[in-house]
Structures are given as structure tokens and as C-alpha cells.
Image (tube, rainbow, N blue to C red; front, top):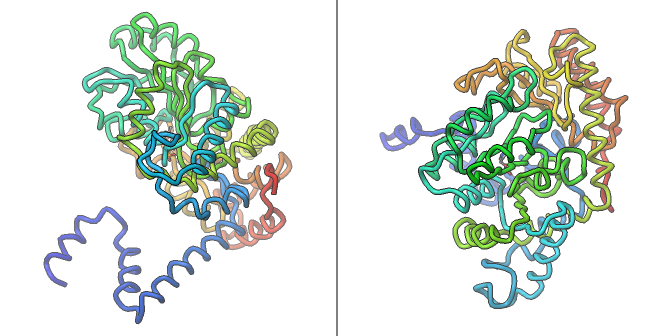
Length: 447
Ligand SMILES: *Cc1c(COP(=O)(O)O)cnc(C)c1O
């Protein structure tokens, strides 16, 4: 091996073992066509394993309807449509039907979120957060955001868009037991720091925020509240969580592929007309050009599904997470928020320190076809990122496949069998495959 490749190998951020597997194929296949076949094979392996044989309990994941998936592969995905909607607002001609698709998407989003303005061009919610920081803050401004062990997300911290914008970031004070904002501490810190923006963005999210009280406090110096509802977006649209835009947040972003159950991408909504130009003129031309019209069509289709089924679907998601949390708790597992009814969202947070920590437990469960993720919890430090004590469990996918409270009891049982080594992982895996075989159809859609 020559010195250049050794250097590049040493600087690689990805896992070298898997890269080497791929390199072997790319370098040694007899034709590019065979390499392409390897890609398709990996996609198919995933579709069978994750798509048919697993209990996917990842909190940020949702299965999309057949119609939404079909639209993601549609012809319109090859068209360029940069700019705003309309014949003079875009750079290209030939976009009259694309204007229709995008307008339907915008109006559907306004209806689902009961708001005055929405944008459809965010290829990720991260980009929505960058949009908000670019449009509503200046470098050097103070902001308050939630630290990661208390549920915060990198997009609102120094290592994400907020950091890239050059903001000074202070922590939103959170109560580590009740897992909500400590409003008295918040009043103190906020009055001292006088943030331009307070971001409420939580990847670990169990309970609502005291938004009204917080917005009254920051209004003393015309501070604003930004609700990063990446996770709760669907619950909000389905009326199963608080309604941030009505309770004092001036703008909200969210991931379309988490509880909202549409194509993975971002949504941004607001009511104040004075925000429209700064926000939309940041999205284009700063952060999106070809914004994937196939994805916009899929997003619009999922918003239509949401109008018809969102309320019922989201209510069942929350009922399932409460049932799963209780079933785990009843089997002696430490579930966060137990003293407050465990959860008001799609998430269940478990302390698995005594079982070896989140990383080991998540990989062990994956061997039993139960997919979860390691998670920081309040007893961890930010630097425990790779080896945290918690496990995050979500009920979006199992709900969309038709499971209800009774099935949560069975799933809790399987999880505990693995955690407590009551049964070989391979035996639990067989039980999971068998159970999952009865739930193969996507519900809460028109298909
Ligand atoms: C997932 C998440 C994001 C990023 O969303 P993407 O759609 O994956 O870009 C942003 N903020 C929070 C709080 C999240 O949990």
C-alpha cells in the first residue's frame, strides 16, 4: 500500500472494515454492472431484514405508504425547479405542473399545521434549523438550546448549524428527573443572557414544554422562541402534543420522516408575515436549489394521508408508547419519567446502565431483530456520546403496521428476555420474525 492511501485511511471517519469490504468489490469486480448488482443486493437484504423481519423501534423512523414510496421514484424527480413557485420566480421554464405539485404541498402543510406559511424545499430538517439561525439571528447573538444529555440535538449546539452561524450557546435549564424545562431557573438564566432566540429542540422528548411561560419571559426583550419539532411534528399535526405556534413559538421546523411519517426531509411553518421573506430567501438561494420535486410530491401525498388518518394514527402511537413503557417498568426495567406516566410522545427512554450501557444493549437487541438506539440520558455527560447509559425506543413503525397495546406487552417481554439473558438471542430472533410476519401491511393510508 502506498503512502497516500495509508494517509487517507488514517484520516477516514467511517468504519474501515466496511469500507474495505466495499473497496474489495469495487476494485475486483469484473464489470461495473456487477458492482451495481452488489448495491441492489444490499438494498434487497435490508428490505427483507429491516422491512419484513424486524421490530423497528427507532424513534426517528417511520414506514411510508406505497403511494409515497412510488412518488419518490417518479419522473418528476429528474426535473430542475430551483427558485420559488411560479413562472417568473424560477430560473427554468417547463415547470407548470411542478408549480401545481409544490403549491398543493404548501397548502396541505398549512392545513395540517393550521398556520399561515409553510415551505416545502428543505431536503432535511437540519437545513430548516440552519434556515432559522440564518434568518433570525446574527453571528455573536446569544441563544439558549437544550444540552444533549437532556435531549438536545447537535443541530442546535456548537457542532451543528447554530455553531456554524457563530452563535453563543447557553443551556436551557432542564429538570433531570421531571425531564421538563426548569422554569424558575430558565427565568433567571434567560434574563441574564437575554437570548435573541430560545430553541426547543429535543431528540429525547417525553413531555411538553412550558411554552407560554417561556415566551412571556423572552418577550421582555423581544426574544423569540424557535420550536425544533423534528420528532414531535406528527404528534403536533395530529393534535396529540402541544401546539407550539399557538403557544408562543414564532417558527417551527420538523422532520417529515419521523412521527409525520412522510419522506425523510424537512418542514418549516410560521404565522408572522414579516418572517416570510427572510425565511424563504434563506432557503433559496442559500440552502436549497434542486430541492427534489419527487420528494415534494411524496411529502404532499403524505400530508394528504395525514389529514385523513393523522389524528387516529398519532393517538395510537402515544397509547402504544405508554403501554410499552408500563410493560417494561412492570418487568423491573428502569424507565425514565415513570413518576409522570412515562411519556406523552412516541418515545420510551430506558436506563440500561446495569445491562452494559446503551451501545452494547442496542447491538444485542439488533441480533434479536429488535432495532433501537443508544441514547444519552441526564445522568450521562456530553462526552459519553459513544457509550451512553440510555436506550431510546419509539413506537412509530410498529403502530403503522397495526400493533396495539396488547402487542406492546409481547414486545416488552422480548426486550427483557434479551436484556436479562433469559433466552438465547437466536431464540428471541425467531420469535420476533414470527410475530412480525403477521404485520406486513402499512396502515393509516389510502393504499
Ligand atoms: C432528527 C433531528 C433533527 C434533524 O432532522 P433531519 O430531518 O434528520 O435533518 C433536528 N433536530 C432534532 C431535535 C432532531 O431530533
